[in-house]
Amino acid sequence: METHHDPDAILEMLDLQVRRGDRTVLNVDSLQVLEGETLAIIGPNGAGKSTLLLALARLLPTTQGEILFRGQPLGMLDELSYRRRIALVLQEPLLLDATVFDNVAAGLRYRKLPSLEINRRVDEWLGRLGVAHLRQRQARKLSGGEAQRVSLARAFAIQPEVLLLDEPFSALDAPTRLRLLEDFQALLAATSITTIFITHDLDEALLLGERVAVLLEGRLCQVGTPEEVFNTPADGDVAAFVGVETVIPGQVVSSSEGMVTVKAGGLQLEAVGEAAPGRSVLLCLRPEDVTVWPRDGSPHSSARNRLEGHVVRTAPQGALVRVVLDCNVPLVALVTRASARELELQEGTPVTAAFKASAVHLILR
Amino acid sequence: METIWNGILQAFALLLHGDAEVLEVTLLSLRISGLATAISLLLGLPTGTWLALGRFRGRDFLLSLINTGMALPPVVVGLWVSIFLWRSGPLGDLRLIYTPTAIIIAQTVIAAPVVTGLTVAALQQLNPRLSLQLLGLGASRTQMIVALWREARLPLLAALMAGFGSVISEVGASMMVGGNIRYQTRVLTTAIVLETGKGEFALAIALGLILLALAYVVNLALTWIQQRGTQS
Image (tube, rainbow over all chains, first blue to last red):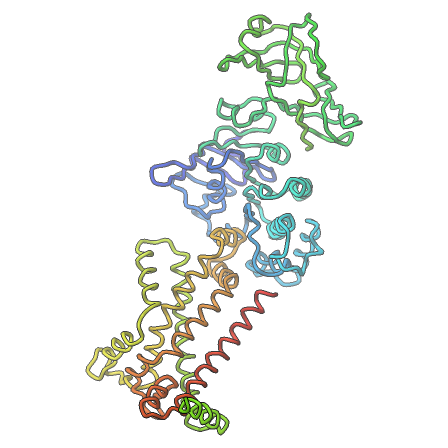
């Protein structure tokens, strides 16, 4: 997926650095954002995610390097006309003290669009975000979820070439957040606006990101599909941050009594969760939830999922050994050194791996 | 006690009678302080905005100057404006001393720091990320500033009220640079000083009531606009 100087790239960052005093707060060797894709930038708090987003919005000066927009350096483009081709949504909705209509119209009025067009677009986007009934409401009287929907409508109405989002869902309570995430996901799919969004929430990254970039302590550590990043973290720091190391894409075959059966890599796997048959899902597993034993052994296990496979490689990790397995789907297990010795786990060892349906973290795509 | 009571009664009689001189003094006060406040707004709003949003060396020093300026004693302003406008002073050729313009200048020097300082405070109470958000929606710098003013309209109105209040009630500077000349530079406050000195308590009380009523009406109008803003 990774391409350099890709003509499909709408935004490219080359050797980008932002320093504050003598501290480097952002260091991105190379990152391309492809036209129409949704790129999730993940990292813990203070990793430089917002700095990167503000630099992309041209609202923060960079110390070194270049950002290209459709192949042209940002510095060569008129600042205002560049900013009018993008839209930024911040964590807090930051609505103006005016009606919902005036808020959504703001960006369009800045662009001096005719009032008929403004009316049309405001109504369209209030409708698409499910807040058309709030049109004449004062923005300060909205709930958190409503306000963030209005804030998103305000950005979408601009019809930007790039949508930049800084943790727009993180301040919402769980049910509100889930509903908005689902609607937002549908809107992204329908509009195919190039979207870069920041989150420290891995579920959001998996749910929305077609690609995921991991930013740790200002350094861009890895970019790839969610499966790549979560299954094969580039280094220990990324692995430690993402936690889950097995992400299996699949499709729901059936669903009953709070359990789903998912077809993945020719296997039928079970997971706790609700999803309609046909729905694309990701099965996420933590390595400590995967147990391993020799193929001919028969331990007692209530695990719903048993997979035959072999060891691809082993890597010691402190008191534990990280065992990478191929069971038609990639799987990572963590076992103690003693177990690894007893089970004689080494490259090529045929094994049976198991994990409970309740250990699977199901993400709907 | 009787003096006060008689004074108040005579004051009402004067007011009801519609004394021509009293009316003229009132209108002049309103015109001078209104203009000084308007000029202070023209100077203070952009300066305050620049100080609130700008990040540059010396900003803290300038802010401390403005804050000191908010407590500038009117007599000190009167002294310095007099020195500058005095016939032999640096701006003596303009022949402005003892004219309404001189009072407007002095009152502007008093009100401008008040409006500026309160503008800074009004804008700094907004979420600092709001300006980023507005720029991120495609606002030009000017559009962003206008939007911030709109957001801070209530405290900005308070700044305007405070500016007007500081000059309509001021006497020292008006007396010094205006000279309290009858039919020319006599305003409500200087007239009250004069009439009190002459023992004309009735007239002084009448003028005092007018001054209070004037300040009240202007502030009532501004408060009405302000509160309408909070309810909408």
